Image (cartoon, rainbow, N blue to C red; front, side, top):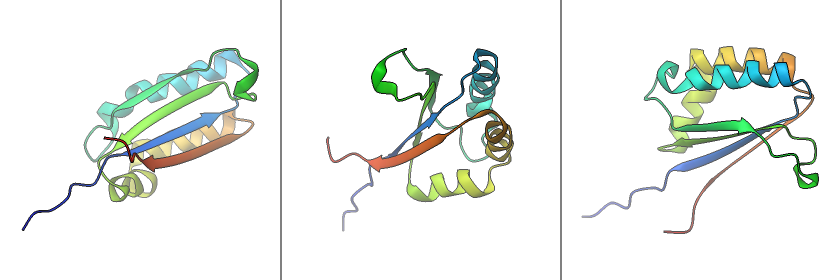
Length: 106
């Protein structure tokens, strides 16, 4: 009997944060997430977006990778570090967007 491993979940979160100081505040928190996430440090890439007309005002981009949807849901609903990050982010952003997917590509 063989089991098919599920592909990892890739999550992209975008924030509209006009202030460079506020952008730095959020990015500083994201820098700590791999060591503070309760359930297995998550690979995270975060940074300011490139000044480009296509960014539609989103100034911070974050890519997180989870082993499963269940791990992502744990991060969203039970991880204290993520709860703290969300609390700060809500006071800084003027809009946000999040999508996640499991790649169909090898």
